[in-house]
Every structure is written in C-alpha cells, then in structure tokens.
Length: 272
Image (cartoon, rainbow, N blue to C red; front, side, top):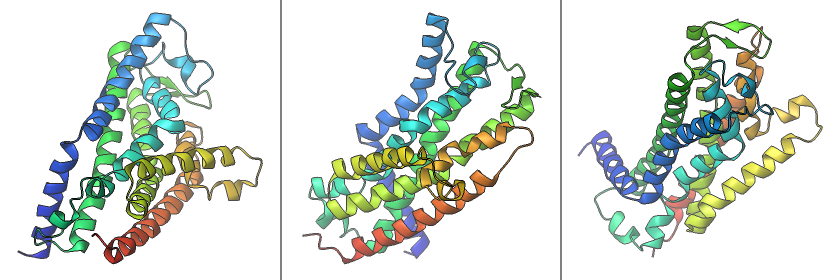
C-alpha cells in the first residue's frame, strides 16, 4: 500500500475510533445545541447581555448572535473544545492498553501519529464549524438578518456582515489549533486523558489572565490566546488586521513546534 493510501486508511480508522466515543460525540452535540439554548434563554428573559460586545443588538439583528456566542466561547468554551480534540486520542490507547494492537496494523508510528494529529485538527475544525453554523442559524431564525451595527457605529449590510462574521470565526482556528497541539503533546508525555485535556485548558486561562495585565501591546500580541479576540478589528471602521495576522503567525508557529515535539516524543517512547 502506498504511503498516502496507508495514511488515509489510518485516518479512517482513527475517525471511527474517535466518533465511537461519547466524549467526541458529546462535544459536537453541545456545539450544535448550545447556541439554540442561548437564544431560547434570551427570548425567555427578555433582557440583553449588555456587558458583551454586540449584546445590545441581539434583538435588532440575528447577525449579532454568532458574534455574542463567539465572544462568550472565546473565554473558556473554545479552549475546552480544542483541548478535548487533542487530549484523549493518544492517552486513550494507554488507558485501554491498546498500543500493542494499534502499532501492529502494518502502520508505522509516523503514520499513526500523523493520522491521530490530522483527526484531532479535523475534529476541532468540524466542532467550530458546527458551533458557528448553529449560532448563525439560531440568530437568523429568531431575529432575522437585518443590517448589523459594527463597533464604530456604521451599518453593515447583511451580506457584508455575514462575510465578516465568517472571517471572525475563521480567525479563532489558529489559536485553537495551538491549544489542540498542546493537548496532543501533554497526552503523549503524561499518557493521561485528564492531563491532556486539563493542562491546556488551565494554561489557556492563565494566558488569558496574563493578557489582561498592563504590558506593551507588542508583547500582548505574542500571547497565543490574544488571537481569540483579534476578530474585533474586523468589525470596526476602518478594519484593522494586525492582531489577526500576528495571532495567526504566533499560533501556527506554536502549533508546528508542539506537533514536532509531540512526534519526537511519540516515536521515541516505550509503548510496553
């Protein structure tokens, strides 16, 4: 079997193994249902989350809903999703003592590592897409797709607003990938799902607190979690992209380094 076909076969197996677990299916279900529950709660109480960006606009335009959800999720929801995506795929093999079987399926360690890493990144992207689409549909059905007032007070046509909302959600993929990569490394090093999921979440929260400290802006841009709020610049007039660009560069760089480190640990570890 050629290398691409062997990798594809390994990816299919890892996808099936992941989706057979309620942990991963539960994350997808929560991502699909949470925005709907949020909208129902807003409708029931009749008050707006005025202390959040775009919270005052949720009754004026359904396009504000995905931005409010993104703002809420960026604090802890997205780090949790990203950590779950990578924190259990390797450690579950240790928990079930399955490495002896996994590594004798005529697949090399490199292919198994690549397959698990790609499945983790793919699951993360899928979960974010489900959450974004659910939030958009919930807002459109509940309030409609009226024009949106951006952070500068300018009115955005529905099509323009939808495009910027899509970019805003896409902008959080790099920092989430960095957290997923950290979860992969932690689970490989500790052989524990609890550590694989918990340590990256704790680290992300600590970094978010560090981002609140009064430090020069250039240093704040180097914090991986700063990119979780970089989308704010997309909803201003004129739009500013520096936080997004720096966030993508820093986080993709961190993800690459962490994945390379995880690969080295995995290829050199004793699986007995």
